[in-house]
Amino acid sequence: MSARTLDRPRLALVLAALGFLALFLLLPLVVVFVEALRQGLGAYAAALVDPDALSAIRLTLLVAAISVPVNLVFGVLAAWAIAKFDFPGKSLLITFLDLPFSVSPVVAGLIYVLVFGAQGWLGPWLEAYDIQIVFAVPGIVLATVFVTFPFVARELIPLMLEQGRDDEEAALSLGASGLQTFLRVTLPNVRWGLLYGVLLCNARAMGEFGAVSVVSGHLRGMTNTMPLHVEILYNEYNFVAAFAVASLLACLALLTLVLKTALEARFHNSNRKA
Amino acid sequence: MEMSSNALALAPPRAIALPRSGRRRARRSVIPGFGLTMGLTLAWLSLIVLIPLSTVFVRSAGMGWTRFAEAAFAPRALAAYQISFATSLGAAAINAVFGLLTAWVLVRYDFAGRRIVNALVDLPFALPTAVAGIALTAIYASNGWIGGLLAPLGITLAYNPVGIMLAMIFVGLPFIVRSLEPVLEDFNAEVEEAARSLGARPVQVFVRVILPEILPALLTGFALAFARGLGEYGSVIFIAGNMPFKSEIAPLLIVTHLEQYDYAGASAIATVMLLAAFALLLVINLIQAWSRRRMER
Image (cartoon, rainbow over the protein chains, first blue to last red):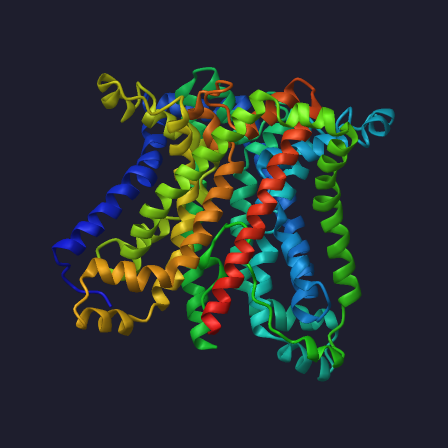
């Protein structure tokens, strides 16, 4: 399919595509690091060890550490129910599981304000018991769980549908328990797809801005995640610090892309062997 | 088998083709755990997604039609919808052209660094939107890397609808490329060769033979990119300028209402945006059903 040497019109097409990608994808990435280092390494490092930056990093890690495992467990349960059994309304259920991807991040934040906010459904009750969900860490976690809700399930469902039920039925007929069957048979079969879903889920959990921005109180050092901290610094015209924190998130994105590419290669190999 | 995610890594709705096995239900599965997993799935789905989402509609319904219409179709809201729709349509159209070019080049031609370029296409999925927003602003603002070169010519790319479109092009690009790649890979080269041997020029081959074949995938990618642009917030607000009636997108107007504790106003606009998103979801599903029927033919 591929010619070793490209003729003129083909070379022009390749150059046009690469030019477009360099302008729209590569340049933004380069800008982040150049702007972050504009005043040298000292200023860069100072921005990262600032107490508010450190607390934003801690909160981002905390939010991901809660929302990713939660969605991992849920994704496995949903995929098991959908792939291993027949029931009416299966396509509708899959559409519902994917729903958070069609919702604007801002709306994703809004719905939790409408449920848990002072004027929300549960507002008076929460106030009576002095529980704060919105404009506090629990709200940030909830909004993150919402926007990352489909990642694991949507990787596992097609994979488990494709693999069918024969392996599980064989294990069960040989006397394995349900849990043993899942741990020893199903899980090894889907491990790469599972990791892939977790990887993407984590990238989104750490990077989410819109939904978290709506439910966060924007309190420095308290309810600021890394993306929100970038915004605050940027709006204060503290560009070097904003880009310094942004560069950490850009590194996370690059790491995600590298791992994703590696997993894809792994995945293809394990399928070829099967 | 292709990894599903290869096709549409972080993309919104993707139809999962279920095996047609309606008749097989007679056989009872020996696999345990249906009640447990299904029950937990439905409970969790309702608690996290369905019930919270319903609040938007309940709140809007509670306003009564007159007050709802006043908030949802206020002049400022109408201007915001118009800006949101126009910019995301424009960005999706530009992405359709350059996304097709990118997918074509990545699938058809071999060149140094092709695998790195292929991985880089997913950058907008992986890069947090706030980071994209400030980076694009640093490039296109009138004192920015590229904006600074064009400012003396009287061209401004940021703090106006052009800036909004630039951000939406960034976030939407992978949807088009990842939709098109699988169909371009599967494309039957013999048909193309036959057309060429019958004397068709390359442009004719493309328009008459290839384009009809990849049209469903192109439309799907276009609709996905359009939907993503419509809801996008993080990357846009930094570069948009955010002037009411000029460069204020609908998601930002929701946030503005919320900041003024006008929950009703925010819910009304959110209702309009949710209905638009659901309509697009339906369109995408219809395109995919159509494309599956075509493949079965």
